[in-house]
Length: 251
Image 1 (spheres, one colour):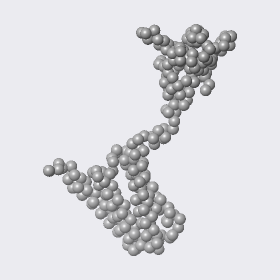
Image 2 (tube, helix red, strand yellow):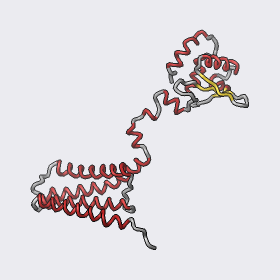
Image 3 (cartoon, one colour):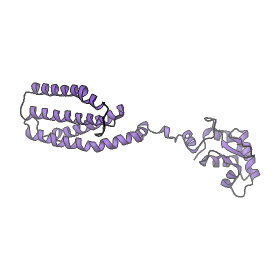
Image 4 (cartoon, one colour):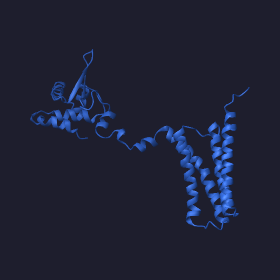
C-alpha cells in the first residue's frame, strides 16, 4: 500500500537519515496497519525486534516535527500516536483510512447501496416470489388468447413478448408502489385488498381482450364496458369497503 502524496512529499528530507530505522519505515508501518491509535510499544513490535524504544521514539519525534503524526496523552502518562491526516482533525479508523485512499463504501455505486438496503432487499425478495403468479397468469392467459384468436398470430412477440411484458410490468409496478408508499401489500393487511383488487383489474382486462380478439365483440363497446365496471368497482371500494375496515372491532 503506497503512502499518500502529502506524506511522501514530507519525507523527501528523510534520505539523509542513516540509521537502521527510517522515518519512512515507521510511517509505512503505521499506515499499513488497520489501527487508528498506536502506542510506542505497538510500533516497536511491528517494526523490528532489535530496534530500541529510544530509536522508535526519535523517529516518531521527527515525524511529529513534520506534522505527519500527532499524539494524544492521557493522565497515566500513556502517549498514543496517530497519523495526522489533513482531511481529518481526529484519528482515523480503518474505514476512515480506506475512505481517504479512495476505497470507502461512499465511493461505491449508489445503486448498489440502494439494492443492499435491508428494506429494499426484503421487498425485492417478496415481489419476485409473487411475480411467479404474474408469470403464470401471463403465460396461460396469452396462450389462450393467441391460440383462440385469428387476429393475434402466433409470433415471438405474442407468444413470448406479451407474457414477459405482463410479468415485468406487474412486478415492477408492485415493487414501485411498495418503495414509494411504504405499504406492505400483504394479504393479511388492509393493503392486501389492494393486491386483490389489482388482480381483479388485471383479470378483467384479460377477459376484455379475450372477448375482443377471440369472440369478436365490438372493441369500443367492450372496452367501454370494462372501464365502466372498473371505475364503478373502485368507487365502491373506496367509499364502502375501505371505510368499513377502519371501524373498531366489537368483541
